[in-house]
Amino acid sequence: MANQRHYILIETIKRLLRRESHVRLKKIISRIHAADLSTVFPSLSTSHRRQLFRLIGDREQEGVILSELDEDIVLSIIEGLSTGELVEILQEMPSDDAASFIKLLPQDQADEVLEKIRTKGGEDVETLLKYPDDTAGGIMIPDFIALPQDMTAGEVISTLQSKEYKDIEMPFYIYVVDEEERLVGVCSLRQLVLVRPETPLKNFMSTDVISVTTDMDQEEVAKIVARYNFLAVPVVDAEHHMVGLVTVDDVIDIFREEATEDILKMAGVGEEFVETKSVFRSTRIRLPWLFASCVGGVIAIFVIGHFEASLQEISYLAAFIPVIMGMGGNVGIQSSTIVVRGLATGRILIGDLWRVIAKELAVGVILGVFYGLLLAILAQYQYSVYGFSLAVSMGVLSSMSVAALIGSLLPMLFARVNVDPAVATGPFVTSAIDIVSVFFYFQLATFLLGI
Image (cartoon, rainbow, N blue to C red; front, side, top):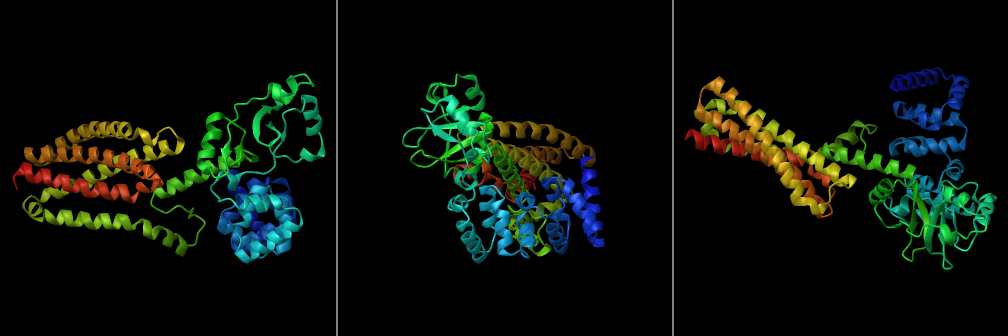
């Protein structure tokens, strides 16, 4: 139902853009949430994207839309905007989104925008730009509530009602600092209203504060927020001074980005979202990732060529090559996917290497026995050669067992040497399994059939 409404919205906007019915478009825009409107832009041509964006007219809504869109689409939209217009939009965006947006701009334009923002009180954005994109410092918001530990509950409530904190994005936690501005405690709004007004913060705050450092990887930050069910986690510098917050909405974006990146890597199409890329760029991104598959296929050709005499003597050996390679490849992808997901979510630790491998190997052996017997019965029925049926069953068993071993081992080894384990799947795993499967199958067949 939601997909149908989305389709109707896209087609309606496309039709109105073609007719240049700007009055009706403005009415539709005024009734649609910016996040919903942002899903329309990928389906439009560049000229229609710019035309629709111009009709929005609300800088805050424009900022929300730009923060939701893919990089290529953003760049195609803002190409026709002046520096002044960009600055106006950025001033309506949260600091972390504004910093991410500026990083997309060409260096000359980014410097010009930064200069204008600096003169209008945009120091927070400039501070965030100093941190790498994928760290806590790069995704944090610099607006938070941090108050002295000697302040009473009544004074805190009065302070929160002041204009100073009216635009705070995450006002659900009160962070407590000592005389040197170091983070020492935290309390929730619920705790604040349940104590007597004269009670100092230090008497009811929680001193067991979980924080992250500015250089912590964003994926680790997301895991911490998810593990403890926080709405936000404080970010501290090397001296334990609080410098920002990572909020739950940013964590959702991180999980989405990391999951998308892992899935794309596992599919062997790079790590960029290629759906909105041009044909040339999509091809360029995918080309190097398929090289491993090509190399693996070439090696498999040489392996099969090595057993050419066996194939000439018993031609039906070739009949079971596809199923043996396919079964092994599927098991390998299943094992590697399970391990990559476990590593990404923290359910599997690098120290669990041998436990994980042993478990997946056991699963591979059991599956190999089952399907080996099944295919052996088929081979015996079709060709009535006992040695060949045994070779097929042993080939399937060895293929699926080794596939489970490789599929679980490669991601774990990659993770141990600090390489993204997702790159071990896709072409790398399937290519390795294809080579091993063919080799074991022909070696067993040659031995058992006495070729």
